Amino acid sequence: MKSNADKKIVDFFKCVISENILTDALEKTELVNINPCDARALRSDLRRNDFLRSCVNDETISIKRLLELSYEERATENIKKIRESEKKQCVKDINSVTYIPSPEERAILWNKIEDP
Image 1 (spheres, rainbow, N blue to C red):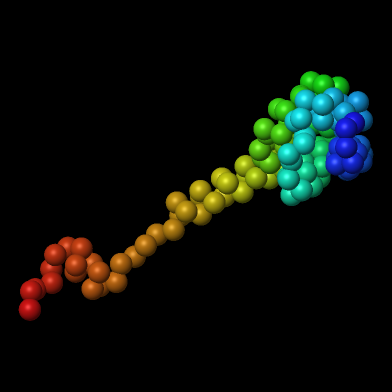
Image 2: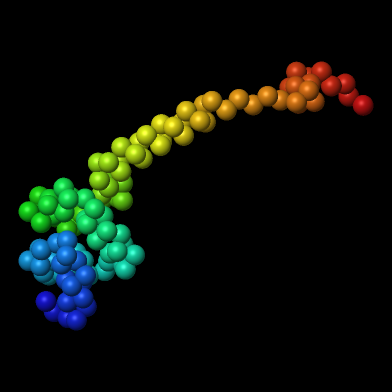
């Protein structure tokens, strides 16, 4: 580790990513420019998603690839199912809305209004 900032990054992520992997990622400068909001979101996602955390720690997924994943890709399978279900429900709701025009709008649509 080179700096105090590197030590802070390792301390922040060491509860979810092994220190060896973090040190290696810092040497490759993969984690150096991560902003605080992304860091908090990433750590939270890794805490919740056991599968993703184990893939990172056994180096199936690199830190570089992890940083490229969207929040949807980092979600647990349960959360993905819930989101998919909500998307389907939204589509159903959108498709079920029926617009009934007023008599004036119908007249305009049917070109039955006489010019003044």
